[in-house]
Length: 202
Length: 202
DNA sequence: TTTTTTATTAATCATTTGTTTAATTCAATT
DNA sequence: AATTGAATTAAACAAATGATTAATAAAAAA
Image (cartoon, rainbow over all chains, first blue to last red; front, side):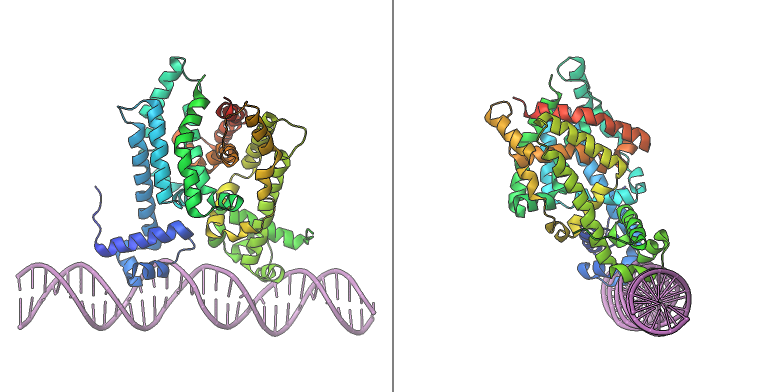
């Protein structure tokens, strides 16, 4: 199902993704993409028809990668709920440190153009994931307080992702450079699972 | 200190803010702003010199309003810590329902241009606010678990704001219209304070 | 009223931007 | 070696965009 891209196409895609993440769709010009990927301007349209089509491809792949990794942890058969939460934190915090511009980019472009998300499959899978089922089982057993699963899932993601989106503010407030900021985020790998458990425990 | 704006200037500012929030800086054209505010294109430059200057003014005012309201609750002398948390949730959730595009807009533009935030005064005030002091007192008394104040503050904001930024995703996942989505957010006015307290209580 | 300053307008300028064209180079096939 | 098709290039096009100009209208000051 996945298309194989030529070397040139990949060069264009890599440069385009980098620029889109940094500056957003509108502020990125096709000439910048051409320059950054060291290809002739016309090749962008030759291979990808238009700037918008190129963007759609990159957006789709980015979302798909992210959601796949998400569902993967959420549906692991072997792990307990608390382990899943821990693994989720570790995985996403590492992922976001590696690509810190991604969340703001995705949510911002999604705001301008919610359509690009409608095409994603695995979206609904999250609410039917093993993670959610395990949580609901815990509620039935009386271990956890009752809470709409959507809030439960949202809270986990909020505590993980939002601080990254606030990085310009946090860096300013606490006078942190990127390395110090990342250390702060890494601390949260251990803390967030504890907080979440406390939140849902009776 | 605050400049008084003429009727025409305010018409331009209102239209510009609305469009900037919806589409971002780059995707908004001066002609759109002129049309939306029903003024002649040249008046934009006549009053505000350039699109960028206009944007800076709007960005500054928006941030200033937001931070002022924030600090106001955080520094209330009469209220307890738990009341402050509750009031914060109520205020920000109402504010964000009223202007749901604001958080994503601000954080996205801040990413592209962190400078606009450097000029803000009240930023540092947050970490020295009554809210933080009261929390630290609680830690000393042994009521609350020890936790870097920056994490404490970040967690509150994360749980409040991030779900709004995810609204396109949440709406899709749960098949919600805007009204239903807002109901979901209003539920959180009561829940978030409880969660936060549970997180910090021993 | 006359003069002067301010506000508003239509038209235009100079760039920028996404896209296309037509020519050329390169690689594979016959 | 000749031919064919794909890849690459420089140049150009048309539309959009931020900004300015010069003229006019409106308001304020004299």
